Image: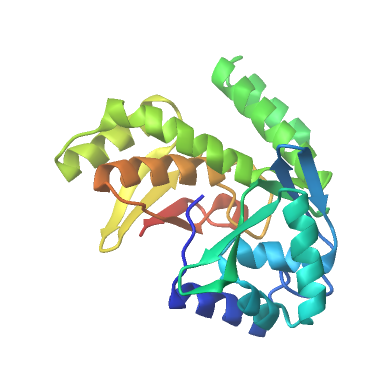
Length: 269
């Protein structure tokens, strides 16, 4: 997981707190899940959830954590020590001041528990499968969406896992679609999506590069979630364009069927 220690990252954190983002709000009761050498840790203490949410945006010093969390130094210190013992976070010496530490997440974030009320008719998937004349691809889509909806209704968000899986798929896929010519590279990606029934890809813009996907396999059958749902596709695209550009590239999904849009749209940044 890439960490960014920039002024921009600090501003992002500060703005999220000031905007009362529910991730940072004291009223939030979500449970964050992290995997460590000692097993999966479920973090439900609101102070720890807040600290970990900030650290997921970038590494922070002790003083910065105190400032952004709005908690007393003794409270923050106690939680940092506990999470360090549990191997969820770790620290290193501040290169600018050897008396201070920089804290970072050393475990892997795997999702959160936050129950959602989703009204989903699974029979619609079954009818779609029957209409496809028993197409095995449509049956796999049925299984994938049913499992995902079942997990969401139980409060399990698996987007971090799907994104990580997408990154790995993208690394393997790159050798098949790579081409030094950008137009051919984009054409190979679009052809792969089309031939593997992942959706129909269209380039909407080049500055910044914006990709639209119609009939997206990952989310076109999902109910309205109020947030983008294509974590797997985002991971694949992030990996492909990072390898092509030989630097870390971010992919932001701005439209999605799960947002009520009629297509998915990815901005390559």
